Length: 329
Ligand code: SF4
Image (cartoon, rainbow, N blue to C red):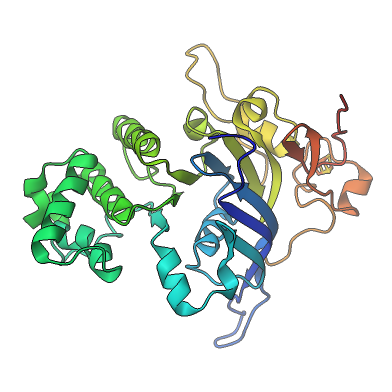
């Protein structure tokens, strides 16, 4: 992956608010501002980690990018194509190129479908195979690519462990040779040793197939060694984004600092700091000014009035905090 390559995915001003339920039966409540104006670029073959607490809008953002959720505003370009302006046949053709791996390997597979049918379905939908035999051969190849024996194609999902099911989900995701995959907390439901195996498999596939990932996680440390860049999300907005090493070694935003400080490291002598104080404010009533100000340990009076913009502070490292000054030179 080259830093100066043209982005494969370009997101600008993406917004989404969901209707919430009101206090009375059948009444509408205030809108939930899940994603509140996000810009992102993802380059071919790179991994962008998208991290933040649950409810920060990460999954909604990931699903909007691949058009599983319709945005209210903004633009999404994939390889130069405006995804919100495509005809349905053009969008169907483009859909082959971006896929998703879901968090829950138990719920994301059809329990009544044999594994071979689940993996081969997208090949049929996109007319990439012309016979049952060809489909069977392709499915066998995909199973081998994800470390499963081709003989398991005739089995059902309940016959597999969580890690094996996630391998099946990955085989389905790569069936149509995509270029971009949204991995929505793909290992959060797995035990640590299995997490490592699945992450290794994903990295290996990335190298072999040239995939770009948007890797969504709530645990910053989980994505530390696999991401080229990291974007930190809080209350529907990106508050810090940059090359992974810079963000981990020199986090600038108070929220990123707090998240990192409260996450255990592999160093046996280190004690994690207490978890972040307080709960994130409700996305139905985002606070005025900086969205982090009610929890920020260094907030000043102006923070509750002026919303900071995400601006470059050093090279490609961007931060949305009025106390972080751009460094020149
Ligand atoms: Fe904290 Fe103010 Fe910076 Fe927001 S703008 S992160 S409240 S210091």
